[in-house]
Amino acid sequence: MSERALVELRGVSKGFGAGSTRVEVLGALDLDVPEGQLLAVVGPSGVGKSTLLHLVGLLDRPDDGRVTLDGDDVEVLDGEARARLRNRMIGFVFQHHYLLDEFDARDNIALPLRIAGKGAAVARSRADELLEAVSLTDRAHHFPDQLSGGEQQRVAVARALAMKPRLLLADEPTGNLDRANSEQVFDLVRELHLLAGLTSIIVTHDEELARMCDDTFHLVPAGQSVEYV
Ligand SMILES: Nc1ncnc2c1ncn2[C@@H]1O[C@H](COP(=O)(O)OP(=O)(O)OP(=O)(O)O)[C@@H](O)[C@H]1O
Ligand SMILES: [Mg+2]
Image 1 (tube, rainbow, N blue to C red):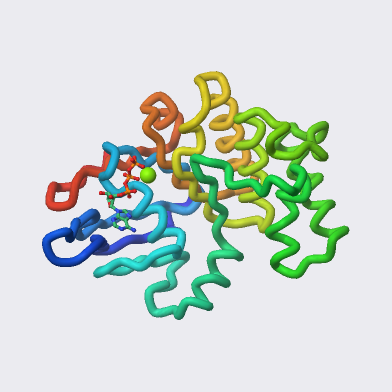
Image 2: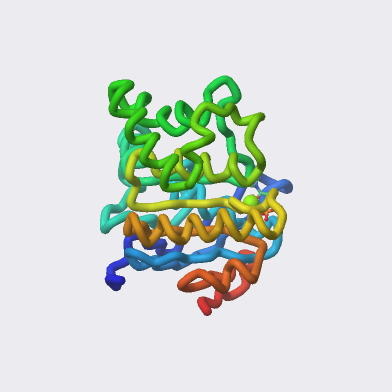
């Protein structure tokens, strides 16, 4: 693992709302995620874990401070440049799979490639590779409602990797699964993280899964000091 930070946050603050309903969520947060690291983010509900992933994933902007990806300050980029960088560099997995019901597993995985302008044959062949990587080749033509929760999440992981991202962001990817399926999806993420040489940030409530990561970032409410254990 190289020690260069792929993700760097400096003095990042973020809140929502205005006036009496204003909530400060992240306060002057610093974070370095070295290239190749699998980082768990833990903390109580409402502390700002999803907010943090949205900032790193270029889905939202901080009120203050700087987010740097691979050495580039992404706050200076306009919306279009951020969208391009996001599509090229970042894969997302959420707690709910967000697969499209009308597409089978293979076409769901192929979709990001099709949106990026790849031809159908290229996109399907990459999707087939990924189906094999998540051990779902025999489910290629199943639709999301014909898959178990764990299988749906494995398809979502495959889809997140379709564009060969360098950074994988997962927000409670096992939050809706039972113990056995959680472990299976988590093991898969860890295996693909290593295989693809990813840098990964995984939000989880599950301390046991967090312990299987390279490091854990404990997010605490804005205004309290943040410890990096
Ligand atoms: N778009 C928004 N508008 C207003 N408030 C928001 C918005 N997004 C988040 N918040 C508030 O910011 C705080 C942090 O939310 P966030 O979703 O990041 O928490 P979390 O740590 O991911 O919680 P959980 O573990 O429940 O998913 C919460 O108080 C939430 O209500
Ligand atoms: Mg959340």
